[in-house]
Image (cartoon, rainbow, N blue to C red; front, side):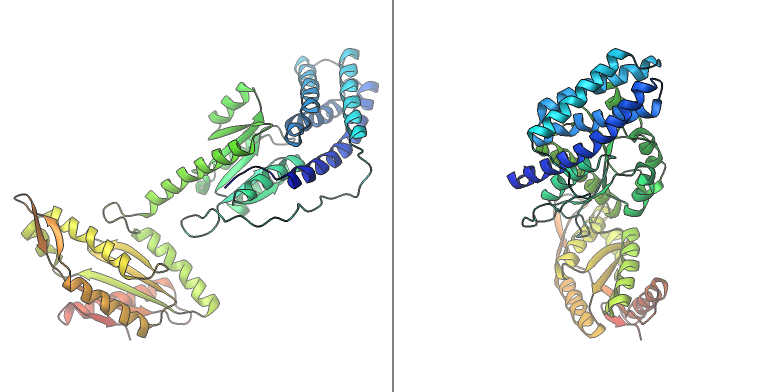
Length: 432
């Protein structure tokens, strides 16, 4: 899917940019006047520098490249004044004034006029197919940038690529928003008032649940020092302003793919490649809440391989491992795609049948038991080569009761499994 902005999007974003530019110019003019009368006013200098910084970072994205370069030069002049820690010179004031005149000239040539506050909606285009995570939801990206236009531009590019994007343009609330949203990836501007991107990144990395969340810094092109510092503070990558939409989406997708692989490793059993016990219990809690909320059915099964120790003792542990791996594939292929299969422990497997009452679940699980009993598992022989091994399974089923929590339904499923084993194995028992 292309990540280019449509011509309608570019025109709309250009209109938004000019509106923001007009509003920012008023504040910048007031700051320049304050500096002219009181050259040591740090707040006015930062206001002026912030204005030039925002324009330099976004003008090229709406095809106003020369304006971006002009404001980048003015931002550089402001940086020199800040670093020198002396009152603003007449020369610097003239540079700033020339920059503001250049902004005024662009606004005049574009026919920008007074407009109502607030951002107009983006033109409506067909929604792209979402890029989905392991649990079937769209990847969530949080854009943190104190410049609303820049944040809106990033947001639109991400949404056009099928990602679920939200923005935050208030640096003082950014950390709270991160904790509320718990995004899969964060795009973070470096230069922001009150709390810069580096400090915010450091705070994010202290959160236990955000250790692996990719953070991509949005920095000024050519600023090597900022890029290096960002990586040292825990960032994963950077995108230079003004950015190319294709590059932005490619970098975001690359980091989300790596995150998906890490998450996959964390929830999969190494031998069978089905879900592990930790994920199974976490998912069971989620499905119980969902079933309670919507009044839907949920049936839980615990499966145990009969006399599994005999397989290990007779044919060796590699053969036993092969049986478990093949069995996991058989289980996954025999249930619906909405159901969940996990290695619960040792030779035990958990099966979660979503929106299935006991009568339906019992039919599905009995067919599964019969299929396993007929199956010949090809396993490695101790003397070399392969041999065929058969096995049977015992399964306990329990249906979720109204108001029941995870512990009781697991206990009832396990009790039903024990009953199946005590009554001769190779059978399914349903908890009363």
